[in-house]
Image (cartoon, rainbow, N blue to C red; front, side, top):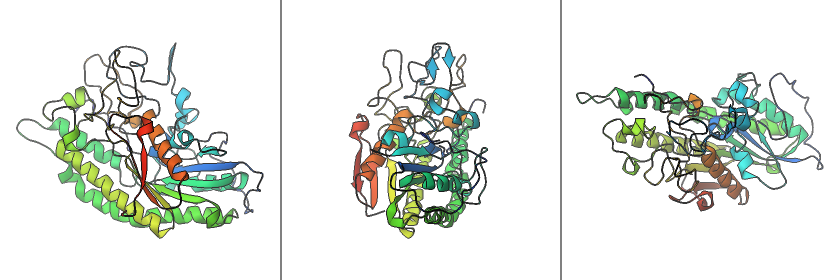
Length: 392
C-alpha cells in the first residue's frame, strides 16, 4: 500500500514571549507570582492543542508549484519554510503554531504560553515523567511559568497518543486501500479490542495528570481558586458516514479528498472519540476541572465533509467554505509531491485551531462547568457557539 501518509493523531506546543526548553533547572519552591507579574494562560499536552497542521489554511491537491493555491502559510517567494508558522519548534517536531489555540483565543491582558508538544503522552506531562523531543516534562515547565507569571488558566489536551489514535487511523487507511472487489478490510474488527484496553488505562492516567497540575500549582503558592483548570477533548477529524462528499467506492476519497476511510470505519472512529470524551469528562469531574467538549468544533468542516470543499486556483481558502482538518497527504497520484509533514495529517489546520481558540475564549468568559463547542456548516469562525453540557 504505497503512498499512504496518515500522520500521527497527536499533540504539541511553545511560548509567546516565554522560552521554556529542555535543560532548565527546577526552581525551588516559592510563593505564587506577585500581583505585578504578567498574567498568563498556559496550554499543556499534545498536537491537538500545540498547533500541529497550523501551516495549512484548508486543503488543496493542486499539483502546481508554490503555495498550493494559497493553502501553505509557510510559503514565501523563494520557497516554503515551516519556521514561519512553527518557529523554533519546527526543529524538534513539537509544531507549536502561531495560530495555536492559546494564541487564537487572545484572552485579554494575558500572555499566551504554549508548552504542549506534538506526540506527547500523559507520561510526558507528569512531573518526573519522561522528557520528550529534548524538552523537560511539561508540568516541570509549568512550575517555572507559575513562578514568573500569574497563571489564570491552565488548559490540558492529552490522551489521544496514549490510545495511539494515529496508528489506529493509519490502519483504517491501510484497510481501505488494501481492500479489493473480492475482499474488504475494516479496521474496526481488528482495532476495537486494542482501543478498549488502552481506553481503560486512561481512567487512571488522565486524573493523574490533572492531579499533578494541581500539585505543581500548589507548590508554586497557588490555591485551586486562583486559576481555572480546563481539560478539553478532541474535534472529530472525519465526517459521519452520511456526510462524505465522495462516494465510498473506488479511490476518489483518497486520491482526491485525502480521506481513505470506509463509511463504517468513519462512524467507528467517531464513536471512539465519543467514548474518549466521556472518559475525559469523568476525569474533569473527579479533579474539579472544567471540561471543554470539542467534538463538534469541526462540524461541517471535517476532511471530505460534503459541506466544505477543496481549495483550487479559482476558489481561494475561506474559513466558511474550506476544511478545518488537514487531509491525509495525497502522494499516490503520479507527478504529485508530498505536502508538508506526514504528522500534520488529520489535525486541526489553521482554521481548526482558530475555531478551538474561539471555543477557549468563549469558555473563559463563562463560569466554571462543562461546555460543548460547535461549528456551523457553511459558516466561518464567527459561527462557533458554546453551550453548557451538564450531560457529559
